[in-house]
Image 1 (cartoon, rainbow, N blue to C red):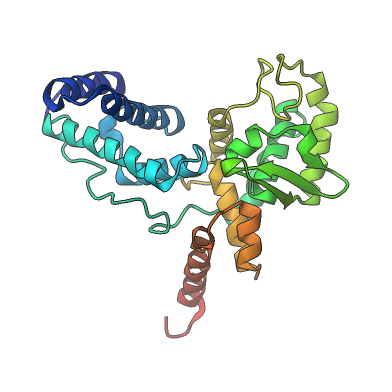
Image 2 (cartoon, rainbow, N blue to C red):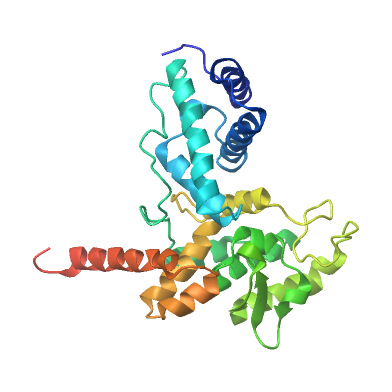
Length: 305
């Protein structure tokens, strides 16, 4: 294995040179490969805080696939192309001996039900909520955000793009625009509405939005809409403070929302509608999670475990 530890920038440069010189790809194919790998590198460095390709594991590749689906709204065909590009990238680094093996080697065509996402228990959810300092403006904002993620199962992109006109306080619903610009109406719990109202009337009114961002609910210090990366870092920090060691992300609250509904006996079609899944097959992962939960109960309490 090469003794030189290569970073993302250098790895991308060498991969680009390889594609140009040895693969002799057409310009549009070359651009597609590089664009896909650049997106992967940005996700790893900014979201996962992985600064070197040799630190990436198969789990990170799987999480990237979910990111492409749930945050980038890509079709399965586009996701498959992205993963193909990423595989070629890691194959190249392996051939050049920058890696001992490719973390994408065993990653097949995207099948999003092939693994179980991270889920927090209700006790862990409460622990995160309780750790948030409500005497600070940022604390009120963060509590409102996390309450929304868990109460309504929002994608992080749906949270960051949420506008005041999408909130129906009296009816206790949110009007959400999801994948493919499809609208859905999602119930929102009373605690989430209370913290959202508190944030808007006590904190948000003191913010001066940049032109074009006046209607956005959650703003960053510069007056623009809060980014997905910022929400990710907030969630990671709060969960760490709450003593949670699971590999969490904002999407963990969406998974927890759906899992707890299914465990409580909610109709799968209703959960599908609230999550904005086009196919019931995608929602069925939460029945797998429920089965896993039941298996744990049996292993703990059954006399013949």
